[in-house]
Amino acid sequence: MNGEPAGMPAEMKTDLSLDTSLDTSLDTSMDIGSLEILEERVRRALEMITSLRSERNKAVSEREQTSAALEKGKAEWQQSLARVQQALLERDKAVGERDAARKELQEVSQQHATVLAQHQKSSVQGAKAGAEMQKLREELDSLRVERKQVRVRIEKLLGQIEVASGQ
Image (cartoon, rainbow, N blue to C red; front, side):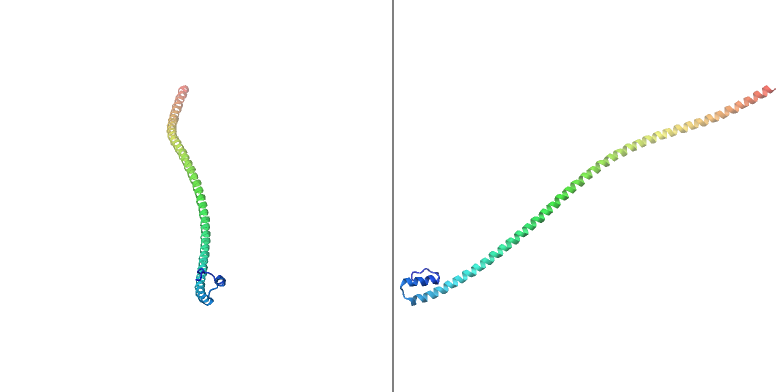
C-alpha cells in the first residue's frame, strides 16, 4: 500500500521501498502477503495462458483437419462431378445411337412394307399368270386333240381317196 500499485512485481516493490524511507519491517510483512497473492495470480495467469495455448493449438489442429477433410471432400466431389458429366456424355451418345437405330428401323419397316406390297402385287400377277398359263395349256391340249381328230379325218379321207382311186 505505501503508494505502491497493487499487483506490482516484487523487484519493483523493493526498488520503491528504497526510495520511500518508511519502516522496512512493516513494508516487508505487507510485501510478503502481497507477493504471495501476486504469485498466486501469476500462477493462475500462467495456468490460464497454458490452457488457452493448448485450446488454441487444439482449435488450430481441428481447423487444419477440417480444412484437409474439406479439401478431400471437394476433390471427391469434383471426381464425382466428372463421373456424372462422363455418364451424361455416354447417355447422350446412347440416346443418339438409339435415335439413329429407331430411324433406321423406321426406314427398314418402310422398305419392308414396300417389298411386302410388291410381293403381294407379284403374287397377284403370278396368280393371274398361272391362271392364264393354265388356260393356254387347256387351249393347247384342246388344239392337240383337235389336231388328232383332223389327222384322223385326213387319214380316213386319204384312205377313202385311195379306195376310190383304186377302184
